[in-house]
Length: 201
Image (cartoon, rainbow, N blue to C red; front, side, top):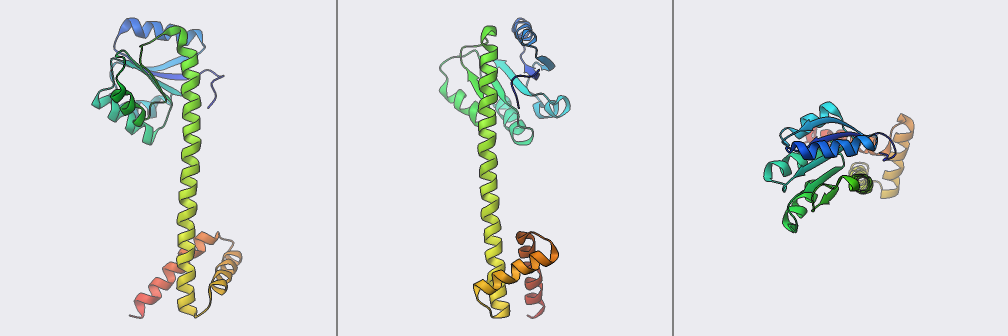
């Protein structure tokens, strides 16, 4: 996501004066409010429908419904979220909001002249967190794949009476012959040998 292009904004705020001030600030920056809600109900559905680049919420403090709505959206349709809170010095509310997926929590309310800086910060935070999460997911997948390959090797060693190197060579040859990934071959080998083992009981 880039912060140099026109962004589509989903805005949640029930105060008409604040909405007008924020819309004016966003329009001046070249951004477009594609959806305005007064409450966060069904936030995820609205995000699916309007596909905003960023979500801005302005309210006194995040209540339980708002936190649940943000958490659901962050899991299913992650976007940078900016939360302008009118209540200050509420660390518990700030921590809960960040845990629910908020990228930038501003505790002194909406300041139109700071909107650009806050949006840039929120997008940078979101992108950094997304990269970290993708790296973590990749590491988890690689670990799970290694465990699966080790299991397939162990089953081959037991079934064919071979050593670990021979079992691994067998898996690699099967992968090359079939034009498949090693992990896919490992899964197939495990399935076949488990079926064979069940049939022989």
